[in-house]
Length: 177
Figure 1 (cartoon, rainbow, N blue to C red):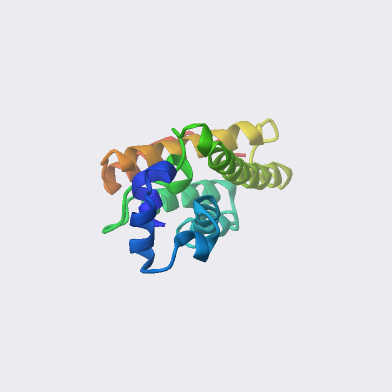
Figure 2 (figure 1 turned 90 degrees about the horizontal axis):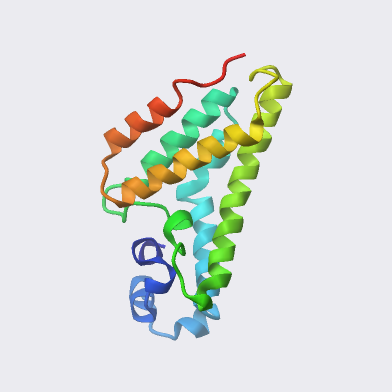
């Protein structure tokens, strides 16, 4: 996971991946191919470092969910002793035609996260937690755009405290019912 986070899909070499995994057999014998390994890494990322999303969606209010999402992004994209940024955002932003399947996989992964957040905000409108005129899709797009921007900024070296200030500022105008 760390090799893909640091180098992206195409930048992660077979030698770097096998060294990081501590395997002496062929990566292809162990995992099929690089794309299959990446799929497993993305699943592990979803269940591990990115598991904050599922927990955030269980918050009792939409604002609590958005706050937990952005705090989770800040926390996971700036972990000490780990490459900063997000595998799901930077893993295949620029790939050659041979990386199209991985790029599509990450587009779908990000779309799934967006859909989960949109559904949570739709429930919040229905429950009266958000004003009736709130567009759940637009609000989910706002939160995911801020989250992905935080990940890009973290990869660029912006520190945790500054990113948390940004997340807090992004939520100051939250629609209240």
